Amino acid sequence: MIPEQTNHVVSTIENMPAENISTSTGLLPRLKKVFNREMLLSIALGQVLSLLICGIRLTSKYLSEDFHANTPLFQSFLNYILLFLVYTTTLAVRQGEENLLAILKRRWWKYMFLGIIDIEAAYLVVKSHQYTTFISIQLLNCFVFPVVILLSWFFLLVRYKVLHFIGAVACILGIGCMAGADVLMGRQQKESFYPGDSKLIGDILVLGGATLYGISSVCQEYIVRNLSRIELLGMIGLFGSFFSGIQLAIMEHKELLKVPWDWQIGLLYVGYTACMFGLYSFMPVVIKKTSATAINLSTLTAELYTFFCGLFLFHYKFSGLYLLSFFTILIGLVLYFSTTTYVAQDPRVYKQFRNPSGPIVELPASGQLEPSVTYTSLGQETEEEPHVRVA
Image (cartoon, rainbow, N blue to C red; front, top):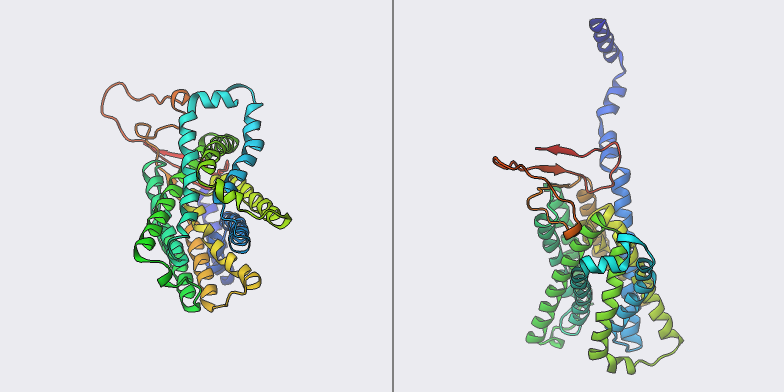
């Protein structure tokens, strides 16, 4: 029976039309494998975040330039208060281990640390606009990528492939192309406006903000994968509103009194807060779907969306380099998402955020310890893709 079945299969393949064979191994199946539903969905989710960031920047630009309302701390404070009202109160009414008090009892200092990092990251980047050029801020913000990659490698044990690094470099080249377009179109600030010492301070502020953003992104990725999105946002809302309120009262109360309040300014504050709340609420969903590194790469297009809106709102001059930058970043994203990363878990070095109540890994009582590595996709897990353990 077995030889007869084998001969039947061979004869069927030999009699198959040539076009059918070429189709099964040709270019179209390969393209379908690369441009799969998961990759396209990941890119699309990242672009939703970019559009929200675009809305944040446009409302901030109107507030600072048209109405002279320089209140970045107050704007962040409004977002944290909204997070507190929605997510922190949700934790407060829960029962058992997911209750607000139970979480604070186990992990309060870790969330306090994360809340302070989140506040200062945004503040440093916004503050840097007073000292250095927009071009420098665009380019130096790319420092967030090595920070996220290194932290993910050592603390989340994420392992990348060559194609991931090629995609990341392509995205950074896209930002460099956009900066070059800014220079050619004359949109950059005059160099004489920023003295050397002042520009150095601004560059240091950008690097500090990018570093804190990287730390915050990696912490958020770990929390949403191992704990919950509601817990993350509830704790950020709690500690963010507390510490940003203190910083606001100390550093920005005079600027707040200078704001010429009217319905237009109120509407801009509402729009800014809505975009920020949407960004904070939606970002953990996308991080769990992809990763912190993928999020930071995807949101590079926010600069371009802001420019395209500025064509109509602020009469920016158009350059073909902006389109080249946009497509270069998209190519980088396609390269990055075309292959999956994997997580190498060693129970001896992988520290749980849960701490006292975390799972205990039983190790052999004697003998030499053998490393245990778990390969898991950072994409959406399905039942058809079980974890493979290599001991």
